Length: 113
Length: 114
Image (cartoon, rainbow over all chains, first blue to last red):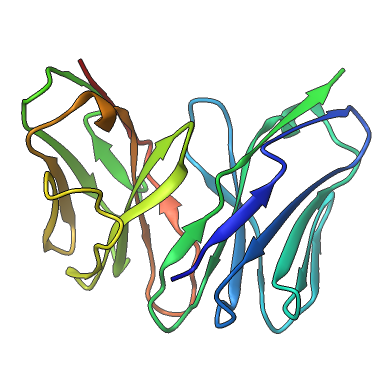
């Protein structure tokens, strides 16, 4: 089955700098890659997703890249702000086959003042 | 729609007791997922349902865990007997089964087994 690895487990960046979180997946059939943000004590919420027919997607300060050959995908946050502090989860799934989403273990992002 | 609703929000129980967690998915969503979150293991998929039918329960850790979905608007996750290592936050999530694949999470149930 699918296995998603996520790095780093903890990341501290200065406010205003960029943050990058990287994930790898094992199932070459995976075609859907969402990213979720979980603030302290709250539920995970989708912030951006990418499907396998594109290599990059951007939404304001957030961008995701996908390299299907290498089975890598990454989340990039630019101009980080205090409210970006949270745990971020990458995930992978094969949509329209079994709809199962497997998550990475998460990255705790700290934005330093 | 109020979103995915889970109950209880918090549960403290003694080892050996039965625990039942409840979930009401978003109306019209055909897929329902149960996840367990711990510091060590992150978000683990326990089981998921499509149209009330269990599709994959390979993530259920032991026979002490069972899940049901008797209808489209209700699911339960039961642990019997509970053990201290079951302490975690349990999330239920639902998504439409129509190509739109975002999973909407409930608020979670924080389970503590003492």
